[in-house]
Amino acid sequence: MATKNFEQDVTDRIRARMKAEKEQAKQGANPAMAEAMKAAIKEEDIFFTSKESDPPPDKVRLSSLVPSWDHARGTIDPFVTVFADPHPLTPGPMVGYRPNQDSLAQLAYSVENTDVPVWMSGDASVGKSSLCRYLAHITNRPFGRVNFNGHITSEDIIGKQSYTGGELKWHDGIIPEMMQIPHAILLLDEPTAAPAEIQLSLQYALERDGKLLLTGKPCDASEAFITPAEDFHFLLADNTVGMGDSTGRFIGTQPQNSAWLDRMGTFIMVDWLSAKDESAMLTGLYPVISSTLAAKIVSVANLLRSGMKQGQLSVAMSMRVTQAWCMHAVNLRDVKQGFVLAFLNRLDNASERQAAEEVYRNIFG
Ligand SMILES: Nc1ncnc2c1ncn2[C@@H]1O[C@H](COP(=O)(O)OP(=O)(O)OP(=O)(O)O)[C@@H](O)[C@H]1O
Ligand SMILES: [Mg+2]
Image (tube, rainbow, N blue to C red; front, side):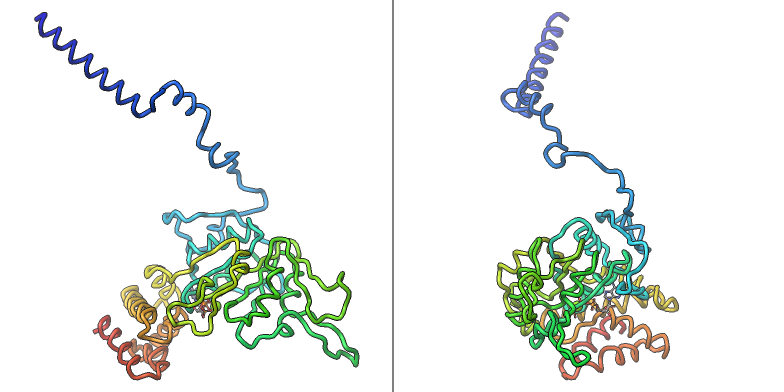
């Protein structure tokens, strides 16, 4: 009995020592020091200086403005300002629009909390421009858009002199005009297609506290610069991330001056809606379409989108096309005819048509 007690005692002591050693190894060589450090540094001290989480009095959660918001997805849900009345330049409602929740949240957060330009990239027709428009719509912000191309001139967007009532007068272009509207969002669409001199003339305006020089305005220096109004935002949307096009699909896009890209404070990559969301968008617009049919249409669209990425197709099956397909299918009660009218007839190359038809057959039989 005594031996057993002794053995038990030794086993217990060995176990206790091993436990203590393990504990010590976890805490580092000096447990007292480790404890003191733990007590001194709390997680919130490392990341945040306060735990403030009360909603700001004049803001609402983004999710409260988006009927299709799915809380289960765990997307960031920033507070945003909603202006009391729409401005004359606030876009109207977008019928059937179902935003990409993650990209919208990143965009809304940026516009609400930062004063640096946002660069949005994503495939053609993925929904970059409409996302900006949607944000302006739900928050009642004034919205403007400049579509860049290789022929745009600074007279078109910055301003020019012209005769009004027999008098030669200066007229601001869309960029200075929008920059002077408080809380406005100005979308610069496809900026990589803009001529180099236009990009250069915007460099200073894109900086934090930057200004726009009205090149061409005959005036003294005090009137030559436009200072942005309070809470004015530049958003830029492009197929590339400004590094030029390595795929050969976006002819004409030039690698950007890195000084220009450096002025962006936020980069957002916009992707296609998830298959589930796009199907829900289609059945929401056309309730007579079953969710099975909508899912099949979206499968065809996603396969064709991959085909475009791989260079087999030159035309994107955008969400505008899936909507048009449903519209024709409903009107004609014929799914294949809907596909032909909304998409197939747009492809003038025989091998592209063949590839698209094969994708259709694979899904619909
Ligand atoms: N989330 C969406 N819900 C419904 N329709 C959408 C959605 N996103 C885009 N669309 C529709 O798809 C079409 C293309 O969208 P948009 O012009 O915004 O794409 P983009 O990425 O800016 O294209 P591009 O690269 O050609 O500039 C538009 O008609 C738009 O209304
Ligand atoms: Mg666009």
